[in-house]
Length: 412
Image (cartoon, rainbow, N blue to C red; front, top):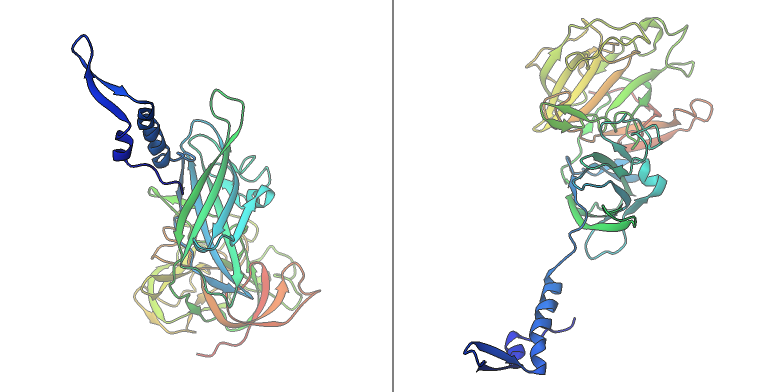
């Protein structure tokens, strides 16, 4: 780095103080006196920096590392708001583990980045296609907000970093010009939450189950964002719709028009951990399959239970059968206790159990938290089952989204 001359050294080049004929003083500058003005330009250049993109970046909930199969996964979102007067297009985002490591953990650009983004206010569908998110999902209109859904996979035996830093490159065409230019946000930090992931017992005694809309970066649950009472929440970040698979390899038999034709209907639902019952709702009728009633904030979870299993950990069991709930608010339950029967109430078109773990005692006004099971048998993707069935023992893992798995009988 070039060493700048000191002010004292520069002033040596200034000539003596003399009087003009008018009696007014003046500095007579020698040739080297021009260094004074040059030095101030150099100093200004050293302390000035690029303004960067006029963008706000918010991470509502730092990631908690969780194991899914052979990978350790960091799952979180970046909310981007454009404070410029022209559209900004996110060209590239790179995520780094540490300042001293120049190699990114992941880089998203092009189509890969488009599929990881949505535009708030447009239909928030599961992919980055033109119909999902309203056109180019990477372009932020003036005053607009887009969301980037991050899903970073690391080897399961590798320690998660304590912090993440992000480099975001935006392109825009400044007002009054027709030439695009880039601006870079060099180092946006996100801490990694080091809290332990809760270990759950199966919510069912046994059986084969589809991990419907489960943990993937493009599931409906993953992309759900709720704005309630002036704040935004993602309670379904890791939620699962458990759908029972019967001996015919399907979720139902003899048609779909009756709840009784669904294999999971009236399946006993069990406590996944010791805890205290914080909320019970048992007032909504079960729906006719394939027919969805009007959904409101009050009935979205249907008949449900919220169970507190630790200081800031709450399990929601939603869409339970009306009249089947066996517990009341304030009850203390043990892992494996029967809580209710699986139903089809609330925002549901078929019998299934919606299960999620969150950081607050609210179905919607909370942030989704990852969880794991001690053991299950992974039978492969739902799209391949049962024709291409596998049988892999998985341990200390979260189930993969839209996979099929088998739980062994629960031991209390």
